[in-house]
Length: 449
Ligand code: PHE
Image 1 (cartoon, helix red, strand yellow):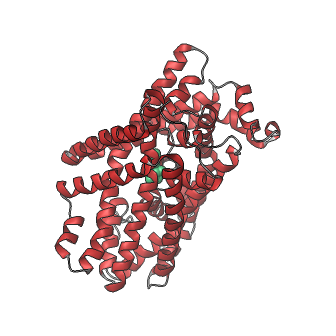
Image 2 (cartoon, helix red, strand yellow):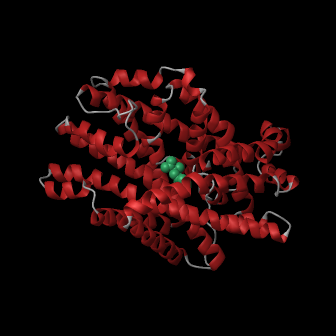
Image 3 (cartoon, protein in one colour):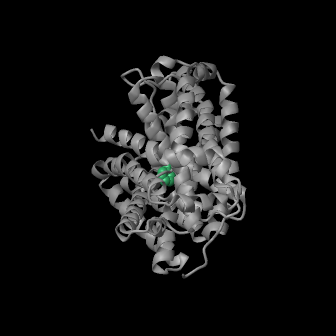
């Protein structure tokens, strides 16, 4: 091996890194409006339930396989089954994960670049450089290209530092900053006129809406994307986890932080939208639903900040910096997937592996920028709607069917002699074996049909 394997220095470092991977653009631009439009607190409770009933077991499958093998996804899944044909299927699944993680990064870097552009544009405009500020927030290929490259360079710089000095160190710095900024912004916005209406819409439960099947399936899908499942990011982070840690418990903490931050984001986004409404900014689409996702972030909120004059500059800068941070702690986990593979399987140094994987992904991302209309939506659909759940099923099958029960128990016993007595051992193995593949299969079939 070209370099010894890294390992997270502390439990907190691991939790912040894995939660950093999970907490991303999805938590902030998707979850709050989805909740508000679909039954408020009732959706919130359902989402929480689904996250723990379905996404958590799948998360555990990745973390446990990673920790057991201490290898990248390709070699890890290739080493679990005894039979050769199945080992090849494992390696193939790993390659699928690696390609999907790279595809996700290639579109994520473009959107994250926009966040960087918006974050910089407000202080620049305030300092009198209005034309540069405008260029940064106006859609154009040169801007998209430049900001995407900047974001990829930041991502590569962190990954270059390795597990302890790159990923763990930066997650430890950025995640507390993210939580503090989010909390401060929410507290400020809650003092403004109109905020309480938003809060009510967010929190008043309407159980009728939640019981619809479509909605459950949507919530399930976003829980899956939100926890970064299926593409080997959690597997590789698990592989850097010390044998002394109790995986079921740290995994639960990661899921809690992810869901907690999504819920916290609701306390900022919904009140902010109704503050905007009170100031005459349109917040509903033609169908009467709340504007969401990119329109919310790049149109509604900037229009709100505009109504605030001086305070708006600060607020906008802090908000887009927050989005950039959330994106960066996710993107480093995506890049680590191919980088770890290149280091362990092809003996590359971390430096060369990072340059090669980062370079290829940036190249692909540039291709998307230059063919935005055709490629952007397509890459998102293929990677997140189809590939991620399909790989998720395969990972559950590897954990539930192709990993010997004794070996699995030994893995859990590494740090817990009573593992056999735990509820986790009584439920989880059956769960990943039967329920996870079936439920994820239903979601997948639903989105294919
Ligand atoms: N969980 C991240 C988000 O919510 C996205 C992600 C998907 C990250 C897959 C890594 C792997 O934005």
